[in-house]
Length: 355
Image 1 (tube, rainbow, N blue to C red):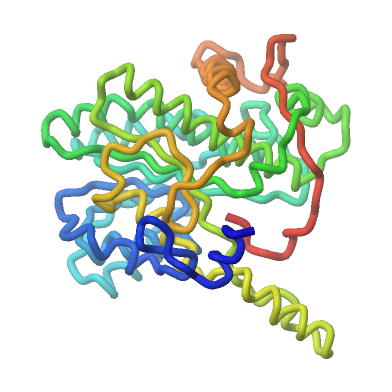
Image 2 (cartoon, rainbow, N blue to C red):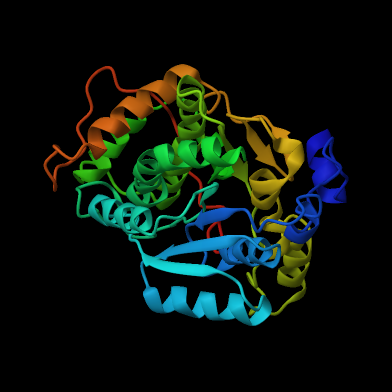
């Protein structure tokens, strides 16, 4: 209850920041970022675009991967218009394709650039069922599996950059509070069944599963980075639900009242990008790894999201699934030892911009 009241009031937490903090305010203590090279997925619109704008404004070099090169070029033009001289690199990337992820990483490494910051921001909420070219349900493939492979292939470059520059590297995974809707079902079994059309597709369930995977990925990744003795941290953020024009096209006292009340719970895009930017560059987060943040403060993930055992199982599953030797167009099959999770099905957030 106290957390909810603090959120509604915009009251600052231990960091001195809160739910109404904007991305620019969250990076006020970061100083000049001209020494930082950052890859930001999903930076052509929404929260990702605001994250890119704020980091570019502080001097960071940006690499913008995008499935649509036109959208990325347009994003680069907007950044350079607001931040003259901004160093912005555009490269093609389709996160739903493991082959595309590998091509992107090869192209990036060929540039010979350092890598200080990786922000896995891109996300997809698919109303209709689809399967990726690798045979994986599309929401899971895009929101989680593509980012898992992207991160794994860039870990050595990030560790190398940190060693050579003495500057801590940071990885930020953008998840959602919706990850907490899971409570005990067989998630990989569900992934297998829905991929093979054995059960109906539920878009909210698929989205929640992918976001829980982001949280578990962060926990396992932080452990791997410590084992590597790398000066690189990994944290996860819930940016919040973004304020939209939801139901404003409908007139009436009841509708207008509902929207007024709902608007107090939602965030603007600058507010939604604040936690990502805070965790990415603020000095107060130095050395912090494997944690979950909301409203620019450390928060508690769900019980399953905090499970080291489940995180280790997901990591092993993901390594096997992304291994180059695995044949493409295969459905996901899970052994009896697969990690077990549950979801509460809800469509309450449809119509909002989910983060």
